[in-house]
Length: 174
Image (cartoon, rainbow, N blue to C red; front, side, top):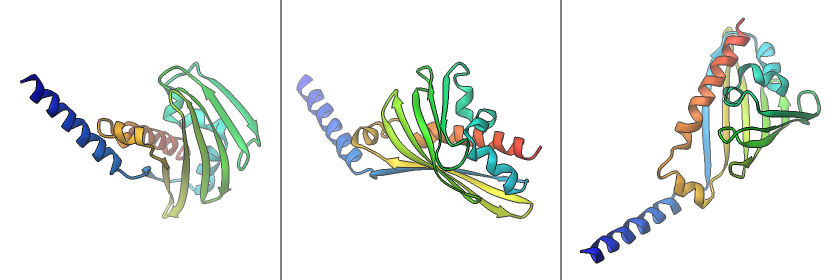
């Protein structure tokens, strides 16, 4: 009987490892919101890391986290680093592209795990304002693929994107 349970566990583990190996090598999480304000009003809220504290859902997780700003004040070359509790971890961001319709950030986590991703904010003029899309993407190493069998990154990160975009909308529409 124990031998059968052991064989079943080994088979289940092998299936899980195969399923993980078949997952994509890249991940992508995306959310968007329509903001009824000119893109020129929304753009600086994203393009300057100092403004992120007013709308980013991540900023509210650890109000005591240490923040450092360097490089340009805003736009290309602006840099932001944080060191927080176990819920927010630590890392840095740098704006690598900044046009009136797109802001791209290099996002590097150092804790609780190392990860190197990219975040794009795209502002598409529409009607009375703009559709703002936030997308994060990057490599999905094997360990992440295994974890994704149990945890959905989209379900963990997506709601924070939605919360942040809702905050951004509220501020821009004032």
